[in-house]
Image (cartoon, rainbow, N blue to C red; front, side, top):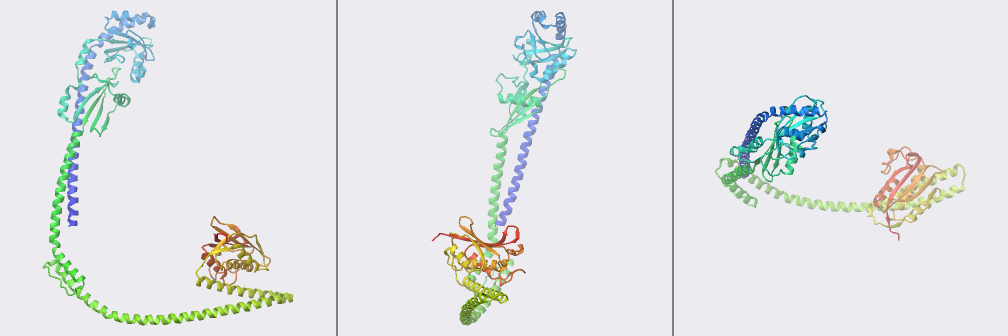
Length: 609
C-alpha cells in the first residue's frame, strides 16, 4: 500500500504543480502584456499631444524674432552697457505683453522687467545653461517652447538672441492668455478611462515635469517621489519601478523623452503608472486552492484504492503468516493451509519443507545435547585437576625461587665482604682483580634485586601512600660509597610504595656502569607543575644515541656500547607507570650527546606527613 501511495502522491503533486505553474505563467504574461500596451498607448498619446503643441509654439516665433530687432538696437545705443537700457519703456513699446531679460556669461539674470526672475541662476540646470552658452556664443535667434516659469509656475513663450559682443543673451518672455487657456484645457490623461478598460490592473496615472511637479493636478507632489524624479529618473533619463509587496502595488515611472535639439528647454515628462496586483494574487491564490483540493481528493481516492488493493493482495499472505506464527509458538505439527493462489504455492511448499527440516534438526540437537553435557562435565574435572597441578607447580617454583634468591643473596653478601677485605689487603694486579670481583658480585646482587622487584610488581597490586622522597634518594646514594654523587635534598613527598627505591638504585647504578671511572653523577629534584615533581639523574658519560632514547626502557635492549641484562631501566619504566608517572631519557646538555645522559622521572606529589 505504501508503494502505491508513494507512486500516486508524487504523480498527482507533479501534475498539479505543472498546471499551477502554467496558469501562474499565463496570468503573469497577460499582466505584462496589458502593462506594455498601456505604457505604449500613453507614451504615444503624450508624444502626439506634444507634437501639436510644438506646431502651435512655432507660430509665435516670427512675432518674437521681430521684437528682437528693436531689443538689439537699444543694446547698441547703450554702448553695450545693459544698465543704460530702459527695459520698462521698451516693454511698453512692445505692448506690455512681453517681459525682457538680460542674462550674463554666468547664466544669471542680471536685468529684467519681471522682478521674480531677477538674479535667477540658470547654472543650477547644467543642460539648460549649456544651451544658453551655445546661444550666447552664436549669432542666431533661438526660440523656445511654451514652458513653465521656474519661480512662479506661469506659462510663457521664451526666445533668445545673443548680443553682437557675445557678452549677454537677450531673452523675451511672451505672456498670452490664449496658450495658457489652451494648455490648461488640455489633459494628457483624458484617455485614462479607456486605459482602465484595457488594463483592469491600472489604478492611477500621474504626469510630472522635470521639476517633479504634477502638470494636471493641483496637489503637492510627495517629497519621496519628487526626489526620485529629479534625482534619479531625469538625470539618468531611464524608467524606474517600485514594488510594494505589502500593499500589492507596482508603480512604474516611464521617462518620455521629448527633448528637441532645436529648443533650449527640455520638455520631457515622467509618467507614473500605479498597478494593483491584488487581483492577480487573488486569482493565483484561487487557482492554488483549487489545485490543492483536487490534489487532496485525488490522493485520498488513490490511498483508498491502494488500501483496498493491498488488502486483497495480502489476505492470502496473512493466512500464511498466522500459520507461521502457530509454528513459531512451538507447534511444529501445524500444517500450512493451501491458499490456492498460484504465486504462493512455492512459498507454502518451502515453508512446509523448512518446518520438516527444522523438526529433524531439533531432534538431532536434543540427542547431541546430552553428549555435550557429559563431555563438559568431564572437561571441567580435567581442568580442575590441571589447575590444581599448576598451582602446586607454581608454589613449588616460587619456593625454589625464594630459596635461591635468599641463599644467593646471602652468598653474594659474604662474597662482597670478603672481596672488600681482600681488596684492602692486596695491591697491584691482585687489588684490581679484587675490585672486578666486587663489581661482579654487586652486579649479581642487582640482578637478584631486579628479579625480586619484577615479581613484586606482577604479584601485588600497588597500595600508594605518601613517601618521603628525600629519605629514599639519600638511602640509595649511601649504597654507592665509591661514587661522587651531587644531591642538594628536597622536602617533597610523593605517592609510591616500598619499591620506589628501585627507581633511583637502578638509575644511579646505570650511571655508575656506563659513565666510566671518575665520573660524576647528579640527582636533582624540580617542580613539574602544581601536582607533580621531576627527579633527574645525570651522568657525564658518553651519552645515549638519539635512536636509543625511546627504546632504552624496553626489556633486553642495549646498544654496542652498553652491556648488561637490560632489566634495570625496564623496571624503572614499570615502576613509573605503577605510580602514575612517566620516565624518559635525554642529553644532560640539550643537543650535545657527548656531554652525558640524563634520566627524568615524573611522580605525583603527596601531602607531607
